[in-house]
Image 1 (cartoon, each protein chain N blue to C red):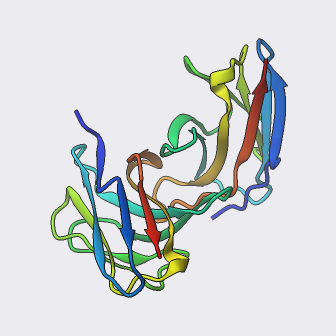
Image 2: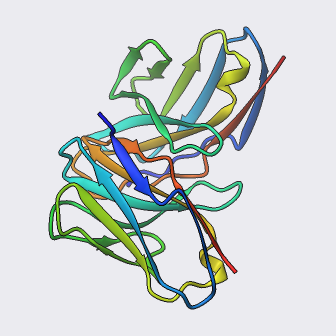
Length: 110
Length: 110
């Protein structure tokens, strides 16, 4: 399982674009990158998953450079309700275990 | 479509008591997981299952047992509760590294 490193916490303001970067230097060929969002008192929620280049959905974009040693979750025009913990996970779809790190605590200010 | 349902939502135990947490999913997923989350921390994997009748240890299995007698259900048992097991417990089921989580069970052991 590839080890991931992401900032412990970030602050931003409403209306801003927020980028959270995750480092995964030992990512393997078959590994995918998956991001989850967790609000207080709730279970994590799947946001986005990608393998390379760029993936976009209605919630976020995921940018993955050619060497795949890092990835960036981009949240456009955040609001107060985007305050949450964001987890970056890296692993093969055939892996049995899904291990979470400590995540990035994002605090959106008015 | 309920997704992942955990029961109970809250429980208070005295040290030494036993209890079982129930997780039920209606998505026909093979993989199911139990995590615990302590205040300000990420999720830690307790046990997991890759299919009916199978279970395996995660990162922090001591003091817990699990069973997967039916594909849709994954039970987490505490035989002799300890204050260190005070936590929020999350169950998840997954397909292709996309996990769906329940809303958690808040357990307090006094």
